[in-house]
Structures are given as structure tokens and as C-alpha cells.
Image (cartoon, rainbow, N blue to C red; front, side, top):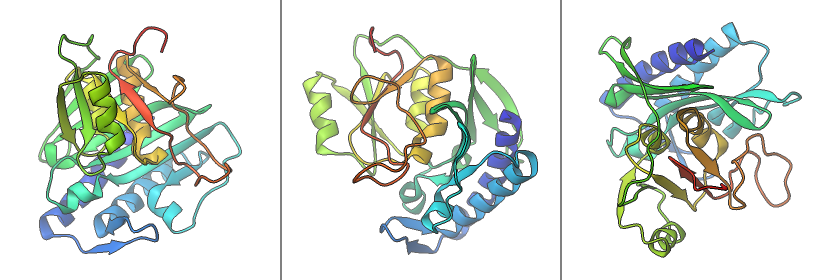
Length: 262
């Protein structure tokens, strides 16, 4: 399955870069979030791959959901797709936007693929293995490197969202005496934790499941955890809740190495 995700993401990334270099036309969706032709092209490519090779697994894809096209999930297994995570980064000409594809089983992300086309690198996670991939100019994998999380250093480094930082996030960082932080866009924050380049990613602002699932799968495969406010693993497939939209995440804290008991 990871090979299917890889092929889909690499082709989608190629299409995204063409729009990136041309300059995207920007529109607003119903929730006032931006969308570009790159989001739509990439999603169409990914869905094409998934329908060809995994036709029996329901797919929840961000732009389809925005258009009101939400398949019924009648089993414990489905796929989450964010064709262009970090659209604001993409529009602002920052390179840390990603393509995200994840397999969810019984509420947990078990296989994930994150591709950062402008950076020429990708991350893949499946049970027992997480890897960083270096991607060539021809969109083929030229090197695969096993990654794993690190034990927190004397000075803990926190990752925060460049475009969606919040007062609550900064308050958490201050309350826990975390002095080093770095702002990164998209799901790459999970991947940097998985690679052992940072220690914690606290998120106290809105995310959707397709924003986090692929990176979360990579992080868990590398030995990390993503915990909800109750200290339980963040779950996926959340629907039909009172006063909350479907597939919205709670606040969470992602750890390279979670504290004991977490």
C-alpha cells in the first residue's frame, strides 16, 4: 500500500510544482480557507491512483468534502487525503507545503505518506518502519533513510505552525519552560519530530483529520505519539458529534518521545 501512496503523491507533487512555478490563482472556499488549481489537480491525481488500486476502500479527500462529496464510512478502514497541506505556505512562496495520504484502521493512522515537492523529500510510515526519502528532479526516489525519534534533549525544541499559531499554544510553551521553538508549515512538523530534529509539537488551533493523519502515521511509525487533551492517542473518523464539524481534530500534543504514562 505504501507504494501506491508513494506513486500517487509523487505524481501529484509534480502537478503542484507546475502551478507553483506559474503562480496560482486563488479562490476562497465556503469556510474562507484558500484553494488553488494545484489543490484540485493534485487531488484528482491521487483519487485516480486510489480508485485504480484500492477501489474498495472509502476515501475522504479535503476538496471533495468541501464540495459536499463525502462517502459513507461503513467499515473501520478508510483513507484520508490532503492534496496540498499548507496552501497558505504555497501561496506565500514558502516551500514547506506537502501532499498527505494516510490509511486509517480502527481510528488510528497506520500507513502514511508525506511529500514536500518543493523540498525534494518525502516521509513514509508503516508499522515497524519510518523513512525519509530524497526525491530527484525526475520525481523518483534516489535514497531511502530510516528515521526514528530522539529522546528529548536538555533544551526541548518545540515546533509551531507558521500560519496558525495561537495564544493558547504560546501559553503552553511558556508554562512548560520551553525556550526553543521553530515555525514550520504543514504536516512537516510531524516528520521533523519523526526524524529526531525536534521534541514536541503542541497544537491548540483548528486542524482537520486530513491535515494530520499522514504525518501522524509517520511519527508513530518512528516511535512518537500524538495525544489528545485527555492523554489518549488522537483518533480519526470522528463524525456526527454535537456542535462540531465532521473530521475536525481536538487540540493535541505530538511528541517525539511521549512522557511516561502518556
